[in-house]
Image (cartoon, rainbow over all chains, first blue to last red; front, top):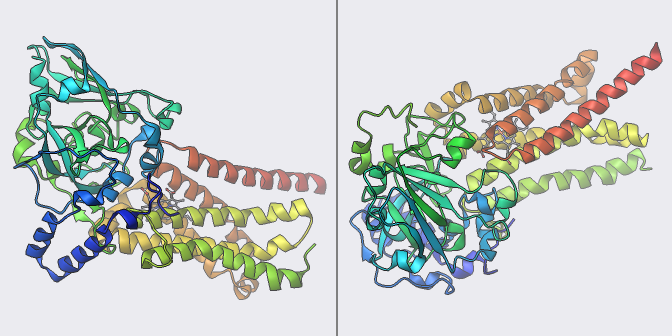
Length: 320
Length: 204
Ligand code: HEM
């Protein structure tokens, strides 16, 4: 069951990354931490990424980037959950080819002074893009390190001047069953919806994402516009966004409605609160050596210093 | 209508080799030979592949008696033990992968899993039931246990129910796949009950 790449080219053709990984493993085993850090800067250059992805030039580096070695472009774009394209983690890469992320517009609604429908170009125009290398932790207990390209969500939201009644922000994914085969079934209640408190949304870590590895987002990763909230489980980071609504009440969210005893509104990464069926104490870092043990999961996915204050006085065991 | 000799000389080696293919695929992938690619998360691929083949072999094992009745021929029974032992082999690979590659023998993780997580407990119960069946599958044990052997090996039914349950429980949302396997099991069980009812009906 060789993984098919959307291009029909085999992974080995597009990426000397296997070599890179092997080298990394050897170094890690030998304990050359410094050398490994050096390699991090030598990760996949633009030349390893299929040319059909448009380059995003002039990216700023971000102080919020972690120092860990990012996963390969191949890992990031061939293994993820996006139920709109199917249930297996290889489905999005296989089934997202027919999706058309252009033209695109986003509807801004609710408790804000500026509302209406905006083209993607209007949404993006004022924001300089930056690269942010974030840890990504899936609720299924696997993780990656991903160099996203985007801009702070807060900067976008401020442009619409939320009113004093705006306490939450709700997001919605597009519905296009002809282009998203997973939406033909009723696995989830489409459209996929997510939400944050306004304070969470304004936190500088919350990112509007348009690219990865210096190129525009592949369809399977949520093109053309997605959210990344790195201290929460991956399902909070909604993809292919077409609607943003400011509300005074806590918005409904897809997974907390599908299985309320398993997924909550907050969904902060928390090694102490297990999923009812599996432990969240550890995670498998995708792309690490075959025999590497799982690694410990950090509270708030390691972003506690920036976000723990948001939850002061909140019982995180009950508000999972 | 294959003779016993044909079954032994051709049928068995062919089925044996075919049954090894999924395992060979996993081993090649783990060793990185033969162009086999276990994907981005090889540990998960091994876990799921071994698990699903263990269940498939259990269902194949359970199909041999109905097949015998349907065809009126004895040869399907010749494959029962081999298929059952493959079910055990794949279950053992599944468990070994969990212990070694998934959990890296970290008993601080394994013990809570085995005592707290229902889907793992159900899988463990199934494995514990499968073990004595594999051990007593030899002709010697069969002779020694006599009628108790048949009673013991009836465990295969509740055990396969547990495996379907184990499968059902670990699915995040879409239960189509475990549902299909459960329906196959339910039909096999239904067939068996229907037959035994008819048989007792004829006896009285
Ligand atoms: C102590 C014993 C067992 C343990 C610890 C165990 C553990 C697991 C784990 C961790 C998974 C994967 C869950 C995931 O992918 O998220 C799984 C799936 C599965 N297991 Fe087990 N298991 C055990 C026994 C068994 C036995 C005895 C069988 C069959 C004879 C079995 C059949 C399956 C099947 C069919 C799946 C689903 C595979 C898929 O998703 O395609 N398991 N088990």
